[in-house]
Structures are given as structure tokens and as C-alpha cells.
Image (cartoon, rainbow, N blue to C red; front, top):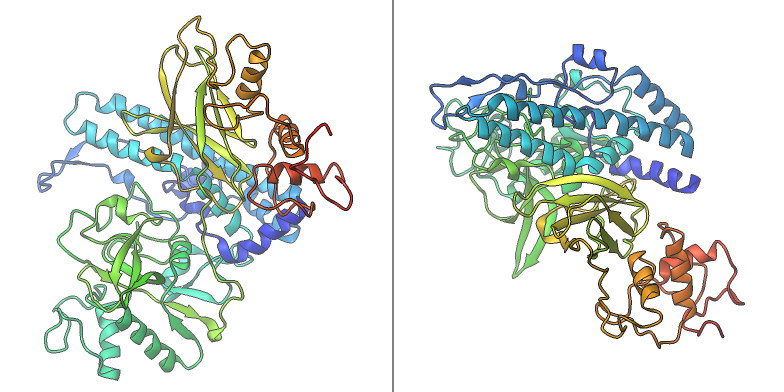
Length: 567
């Protein structure tokens, strides 16, 4: 575990994503001081004030708007400092537990507020819309829960963290991106028309198609430049680099963009979906401030990134991030990308911002946000009040978050997390269908699979019904039938297919070691097996790694997984 923590610390320098201050909705300084929390906690009062000019007939709640990035609590700062000085297992988990404790307080308050809103708005015009907005916020918190916990832990390992003050970011043109490398800075705003005009004047480059006689539209100097292609943006970066003479400039990768942005404040109002066009880059700076203080990440214009999505038929296709004034709100999320933009074309709803690399020194390790593979999950009823979930282990996962999924509403509810590859849900109603999702977790990554397509469903037994025998080659009255039910129910054996158990098959050493590993709770394994005859990707691979720590196997360090057992 010590080695794992050290590796995590190294990874932190290239992977951290968001500020703890961006984990939940914003909190006023007074509230933060009162809560003594390093994660923002904010209560909201419902203001049912009809805006006569609002054609959508919506109600506004000014408390929805995120105003500031609060400072970390002294307790959190102390734990961060302790961990940075000594990245031991104890210090890591002390800090992680503090982060989880603080964020759980945020989750609980949001859940309480949702219930309050349901009561306050019952029967009132527009009440359903307000509740739906808060419900979406709570759902986003559930789905991104571990992403935010992990991101905070990664960010807390960056030595610049305790020195940087987000509140002072407005004084700087370029903002440090924690976790992308110490030489990586991001422009505080997207490139504006006024800034792009300097490039055109200096180089004679072609003006965007919406400019007249080489001049941007009147009154739009501080609007983000648009109708610029990816190739145009590269030209701008090359010009900046030549003009600077010391630092280099380029477009951000998708991962760098996500690191700089952090998570979109779900409860903030900004330029997306309801406006007629672009706005000045600082107009929504109070509510579009990213993890480290750069602004205007969500809405206004999509932003080019350097991550190539495809190169087919001579056309380079890239993804853009952040949404635009014309986007639906869900498309503005940090995690979302719009693919299929031609690198040679300019678009009305696409602009860009740049990365500054100090002295041109690129980080040794490129930032690359990855997601864990979604597990294949099976669900089966054990009784009239319980359902068992089982799945194959996912490479890199150390835990699994269990969600209940409502097929009618599409909402999820966090249940529990498991360190093995099975989980039993109890306290259910008889003869009722339940659906679940299993999300893999590690200390740096999560699975992006909390959605309907990854849900599995099982129906609890009716009262008095016997646990069914799903294997067609095991008779209900066979002398070993109860034993087969037991090993299947406990997740010790899965059979040779969905409908066969093969009771007469010869038992191998690979099977036996897998059963023993599952009896031990199927603990997650990392690295490679020391047995020379165990390949990656076999059903017994994790079990073999587990066994290698407990036995030397057969000489010379082999498991002989296919050999019959007993001999």
C-alpha cells in the first residue's frame, strides 16, 4: 500500500482535476467559517419571484448562483500539509476521510434542500421546474461523487496548492493548472476579438467570416472570437510564441482543459441555452470560474482542444469542450465533449483559449484522464427480500459503488460501496423488479457508466418461493443441488455458462485458487502475477496474484492453473 500511495503522489502531479472548493455549490465565507469545512456548504432559500420579462415563465432563485471559491479550512490545510510532507498511507487516508466527511455534508444538505423544495413548492406554479432543477443537481452529485473525491485528493498533492489564491486570479492573464505540470498555465479567458485583431494586424492572417473589412463587429471587442478554425487557432499560438520569445503557447488537450475547468457548477446561471448569442468573456465571471480561477469555461462558445478524435479521408476531426450560448445545459458539463468538428472549418459557436508553457518546458508526463472499464454485472434474486449482484473484477479498480436505478424516472440512488466483486441488497419487497448499476473506482479514476444502458434488473421471489436453480444440467433434487445454489448465491462459482454448471467437469488448480480468492472477499489486485504461467486477462488472473502472496506455487514459480486438482 505504501508503494501505491507513492505512485498516487507521483500521478497527482499530472492528473489532478478540480478544487475542493468546486466540489459542491458555493458557500459564503460566513457559512464556511461556521461549518469549519474545506468543502463549500450552502443553504438556499426559495425565492418565488416571477420575472415579467421572462418568456419561459420561470422563477428565479438568486441563491442558485455560485459567487466565489471559499478558502480551505485550517484543519484541511493541516492535513494537506502533513500529507505533502509525508505521503504515507496513514496521512493519505486521514486526508481522504476528511474530504469524504466534508463532501458527505454537502450531499446531505442538498438532499435536505430537495425535500424542503418539494414541500415549499407543492401546488405552486413553476414549482415542478424548480424541484426538477434541484433534482438534477442532486443526481449530478451522486454520479460524480467519487470523481470529485478523487480529484480533490489528487489536487491536494500539488505543492502550489496552498500558495495559490483563487481570489487573486483576476490579476493574472495566465492561471496555473494544478496537476498538469508546474510549467502549465491556462489563459484566464477565451481569446477575444480584440486580442485576435492584434494577431491579424501583425501577420496579415485572414479575418473571421463575421468581421467586416477586417474589423470585428462594433461593440464586441471583449467577446470571444468565433468563426476561427483549429488551424487558425494554431496560427495564433505560433504568433504568440514568436512574439513572447521565451514561453511557448499552444491549445490545451482535453485533459488539461478539464483540469483547468473543474466541475461545472450545476446551480449557476450562465450563458447557455437561453441567450441569443455570445457575451463578453467576463460577463459571467462570478459563476463560470474554474478550479483555479480562470473563467468562462461553460457556455458562451465551445473551445477547441488539441485532442484528435479521428483522421479519416484526409479530414482531422477534433472535440470541443464547454458548450456555448446555443447549447443545452447538460452539454456544457466539463466531462462532455462535442465531437465531429472539422479542424479546417470555423464555426459560429466555437472559439478557443490557449495554454502557456513556461520557458517552453513541457511536463515529462503528459496529462491523460482515463476512465475505468464498466464491469459486466449479473443480478439474481436470492429470496423474497434480497438480490445478489456479481461482476468480474475491473483492472485498476479498488472499490465499486453500488447504485439503485429507477427505470421509470431515470434517477439513481447511492447504496454502498464494495471492495469485492459481489454485493447483496436486502430489505426489498417481494415479487418486485429492482435495477442496479455498479461503478468501478480507484484512487485516481472512476468508471463513466452511471446510465441506463449499464443497469441490470432482477425480480425478487414471491413469498415462500425457493431460490431457483438456473443451471439446466443440475437437477432440483440432485444430492449436490443445495451446494450449487450456495456457491452461486455467495458468488464463489458462476458456472461454465449462464445455464450450465458442468457438475462432472474436472476441477483445476485455477478453479480452486479462484474459489479461495472469492471466499476471501475477492480483494482487488494490482500489478502482475509472479507465476510465470499465468497470463493477464484469464478468469483466474486476480486470484493468482492473490495466491502468489500466500504460496510459492510449484517450482519454478508456476501455478499450473490447468492441472487437475486434486492430482
